[in-house]
Length: 326
Image (cartoon, rainbow, N blue to C red; front, top):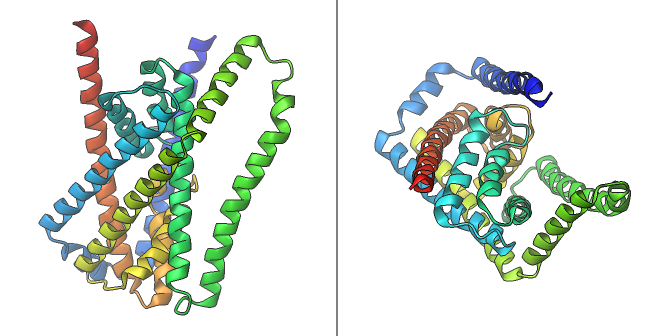
């Protein structure tokens, strides 16, 4: 019966990703309809190829730091993964976020490799959850920093919206934790011994991470540094497009646009991120077509980086398969 359902599930997965790509194209099309195409094209053409390549290299180097962070956190939970395996997990997840049909992005691919290679699969799952929490905390920290950097120049309505976004994120996290505590025992009732043992291993792995606060703090610092690097690279691309804004404006708008892109509306947040940036930077006097041009070039960096990550994951997988045969 499982084999019968697999083709159907695969077909639904590809229909899902197709719908998300169509949604991304629709959002981009709406933006293109309302913006002057000749000015947008001229802004994109201002970006030198050398600048684009340098930005791409910086993007990839930041993700190399991301590999180190992810491995550090999952190994703190007891995963015992080496660098090549961690790089394959991370790169595969980066590629899957853009190109593969998955509701929760690249975590499926990232975990699939890690669970198979680690002697303690529960630690991989727990470490990945902790790493995601650190990434969300880094994003929330950048949003708060942006609000603090612009207390007077941000329009009151926009500042209130940003503050409400932070409150919503904190509220959702608190509700999720409360529900987990309340439903923990009812969910366990009637479960098999095997399921309880697996859950026990997961709890032990989560406790292993929580007992190493220095790892969590350093992981949060690395996550903040990575996101700040992406923000700075986007601002540099915007300068090449002809958009000159203080960096503090980007610290306010970019993290909020990244949070908006987390909504599962389009594949990889494409279109949603650009629309959010246009809306958030326009009150600061930024020309919408220049913001959109910078966003499109940045999407090019993300897509090309995702393709290179997929090639890297494939080559690392072939390398591991060759070593296993020897």
